[in-house]
Structure formats: C-alpha cells, structure tokens
Image 1 (cartoon, helix red, strand yellow):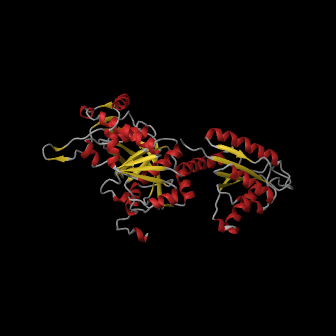
Image 2: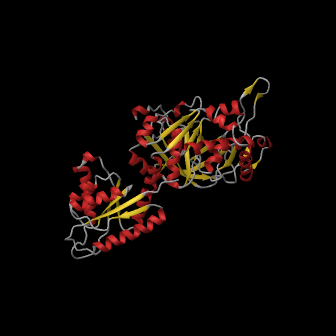
Image 3: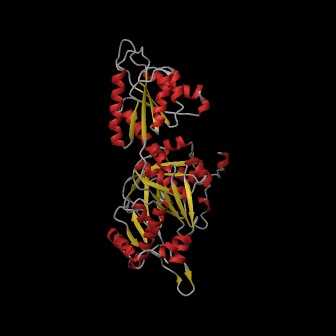
Length: 479
C-alpha cells in the first residue's frame, strides 16, 4: 500500500502589520484542504499564529508530534527572524511560503515576500550548520504558480517517502556478464533507506515446481483472458508462465517485497525450459513490479517513477537512433505492458533461440509479451548504479510505418528533451556513451521531468551533464 504524504502548516506574523492576517491564513487553510483531496495528501495546521520564540517551539513540537513530511512555514505577514531559526530545525522537508499583498496602496499590509526572503537567507547564511534548505512557494493555493510548484513537490516527496524503507528481492543475482549493473547495497541503504534480500535461484525454482495445480490452472485462465496467443508455439508454455507468476506472487507476499529483480537468463532456459519475460510483464501490470536481469537500481528508478506518476513503469533498452527525425528506438525482448501497448500485447516465441543442445541444436523458447508502444508522452529516468548521479529525458512515442519494427516490445520516441531542454539525438547518445551510463532505461507514461529533478535535488544526486557530440574522442574525465 502506498504511503500518503502529510503536510503541516504554520503561520508567522508580526502584530503591528495591519493586513487582515486571519483572513489570509484561513483562506490558505481552506485552499490546502481542497488540494489535499485533489492530490491525495493528509493535512494538518496550527490554529494560532506564531509570534514569539515560545510559539515557534510549541508549533515545532506539534508538527513533530504529527509526523509531518513537509512543513509549510507561511509568512502570513512579516515576522521576526528568530522564528525560522526554531522551525528550521524540523525533521521534515521545509517549504517557505509568501502571499501577495492584499491592498495596492497605503501602508504595506503584510510584507510577506520580504519575510520569506529573510527566512530563506537565514537558513543558509546564519545557520549553515543545520545544512537545511527549503523550497519557496508564492501565492494562494488556487493560484497557478502556487499550485504548479506545490503539485511537483507533493509528487516528488511522495515518491521519496515511499522509496524509503522499501525492501526489494534480488533473485539469482545479476545476469551473467551484465556487470555494469553492479551496485553497493550499503550505499543503497545509506542514501535511499532501501534494503535488498538476496535469494538463490534454486529457492524460486523449488517454489515453481511446488505450486498448487488448481491455482496454476486459474492463473493460466487469467492469462488467456488477458492475452491473445498469436504464435501456436507459445501455447505450450502458458502453463509454465502461470506457474512462474504463481511462484513470484507467493515469494513477493511472503517477503512483503515492494519490487523484485530476477536474473532471467540463462537458468530459466536451461533449468525450466522457458523464458520469463511475459511473466514479469504480467506481474508488473498487476502492481508487483518485476524487472529482468537482476537490475536492482533500475527497479529503484522504476519505483521512483511509479510513485511520481501513479502509473506502472516499464524497463527498456535503447537499441537504435534516427538522426533524420531526432528519435530513439526503445526495445526489450518481451515485457510488453497493456498500459503501453498500441494494441493489446500478444504472446509469442522469444526472438532469440537457446540454449544449444547436441541432439536438438538451438531450442526455441517462449513466451514473451510483444507489443508496439501507443502514441503517448513519456519520461525516462535512471539513477546511476554508482548511486550518486541521474539523468532524465522526456519525449513522445510516435507511430510511423516507414520506421523499423522488430519483434518484441518496441517503440520510437521523438520530441526528445534532456533535463527539459530540446536535444539533438546525436548529443543524447553521445552523452549516454561518453558518460558511460547503464544500458537499461526505465520509462513511465507522462511528462514528469520536473518531479524527477526535484526528487534528486532533495536526495542530493548530481545530474549527468550533456556532452555535445564531437568527431574526436572525448575523455569524460576531462570534461
């Protein structure tokens, strides 16, 4: 179950400012109540204004007792700089908020913006030892500027809250040879508060063979109701697909895992006589995010995107690019999702045969879930396996019959923007290669680059800066 974000509000004032401070504060409370229903967060507030140091201490205790995730400190009017020095010690994330003046002439009624400026500066210049930062907000909750900035923050902090204290399962380790997917579990815990249970492939294999036959038959019926089997060869593998879905469900429920990364080859082919691609797709579609090749950091990146977007994510490779229309080709063996498919995914054989046997040669394998991406906006974001950097790009999946169309799960992404800026595709692939980024690309529907960047700024990860293409060798250590 997703954890809801909790937002707290306190209002700072100075008594001698003449504006209608209570009206401003009440309007703000009512606006946030409405937004809490629309955006799905819990909301609490302090009824009395914060005027003195004692008030600030009481307000801080109230918000700490409420376990707020984001504390909004509204400069309802100008106030003493002593107050933020107390409230700035909150354990939660911090937002400083100013409102417009309520009159256009005569005595300045609130001087709210100036106070937010003062408080923001005090946090950094006077109290650097706290290492605290805050995001600023301006306007009333119904104003476009406030709402736009606030919604980005709600989605970003909700993602961070749900990522923290997650527990993932890594089954069978990394796929052989994919050593760029190595990560340090100690850093994963220290930076993201994410733990990983390492499970032997043999344990999953044992569960696979011990599944109840009636349960497997019911899942196979579910699969047939959801997918069209276009390749008669794949028919013979549906029972194994159902058995694997059942086993992973059981594993996930027993461990209460928030996601699973499973090494998909070569042992599934060699020991179970199948490929697991469509099972992973099926599980991910029902909310049990399951990634291939034992890629824990892609799983982390996908969960981040899912919590931001409220939508399932999918994991792809970047397999080609086209300079003529500035697009990239995203592909994977067969983890097609009904949430992304132009038409419903279909079950068919894997494009790549194996393993090799002396008597039968290269063996055909199935099933995979194949699809073409529907036209839609999308965001790609990945945390680096060094757990210190990230990148984000956005674009739109396009439909063009003249472009290549391979077997598997695939689509061309155009209108590419890297960190919100229009990008030449040659600069993009040059950046990915020169910066040595990992070859897996988590994708989610919608444009969410602002939210991704805010998540990473709070977590203090560095952006992977673009490296414009040059004909000469570019040494990334010198850039």
